[in-house]
Amino acid sequence: MMQLDRSDLDAARQHLTPDSALPLIRFMADQSLGAQAEVAPAEIRQQAADLGWVDARTGVRTTLGILISDSCREYLFWKERHGALPFENSLPHLARSTFRGKYVAEIGAGMGANLMSLSGTAGRLCGVEPVAAYAQLGQILRAREGIEGVEIWPGGAEDLPFEDGELDLVLCVTAHQYFDLHAALPEIARVTRPGGELIILGATLGQYAAGAGARVLRSGGRRSKYYLMTLINTLGYQAFGRRLLPRREAFSTSRPIYPSTGFMTRHLEAAGFETIAPPQPAAGEQCFYLRRREIGTGN
Ligand SMILES: C[S@@+](CC[C@H](N)C(=O)[O-])C[C@H]1O[C@@H](n2cnc3c(N)ncnc32)[C@H](O)[C@@H]1O
Picture 1 (cartoon, rainbow, N blue to C red):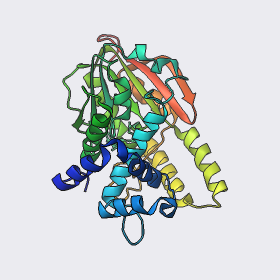
Picture 2 (picture 1 turned 135 degrees about the vertical axis):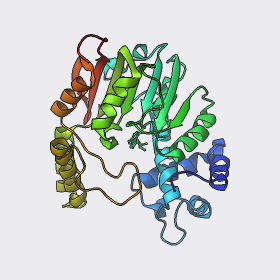
Picture 3 (picture 1 turned 30 degrees about the vertical axis):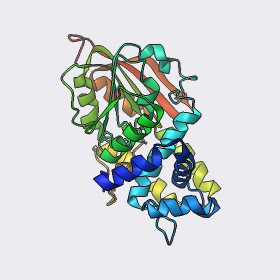
């Protein structure tokens, strides 16, 4: 279930839109961050259970609840950043002037928190997202904030719903890990106009390995199988061009890979991009800032 049906959508709109919805939004966001449901007020837990967002008996999130809690979490992070993009204050190329007046598309937009940040700055703004539920929930949360002029279209990075050279700037924020990069990077190059820009923000292999190692040590080995699987998939993707250990779960974020900075740079160049600024780290993420080469300058 990756799209909300009419009744779930109506219930989400009714219960997430009012000002009084903030405690429920916070409860759902906390669930996605691993909070203990029992510490929340009983009436909020009951409300989430009545809505079918958590299991009434176990308190564990349902599939619908996972989609809602992911969206609530991103929405609250956005509010905590006072509407800024992640790292907007520490990475100079994420300043608003980079986006001003441009046709900007975010690929892997989720519920659209970054698009909310850019509304009123970019000339035209849209997102592409394969999970319809995130786009549906984003619409509700944008309405809550009175934000208009943002569209999120269904689709994936490997087959984008844009004409050749249509976009001035493509943005990917913690999303490239889920793409099939061999297909996605040439496709992103196709839709970016010559001279147009690409910003990719997300962790790379060294950053992931360091973070995962520290988390495994801290947790006494918990989830080490997951981290190992991700490392095998990353190295397999770099060597053979495919994830060696696909998982059965339907979630779009269930098979991340964290390609190295060198892999990303080589494949971005091969796809037709040139570096504007060297990859810049920010709190465990790497920011790639590139320009689509002009026609006749080698791709
Ligand atoms: C970690 S979320 C980030 C969402 C958003 N960019 C943000 O910063 O809040 C990654 C998003 O990438 C999407 N995604 C997964 N596979 C994708 C693909 N092949 N093409 C485009 N987006 C994809 C997921 O559905 C998810 O919404």
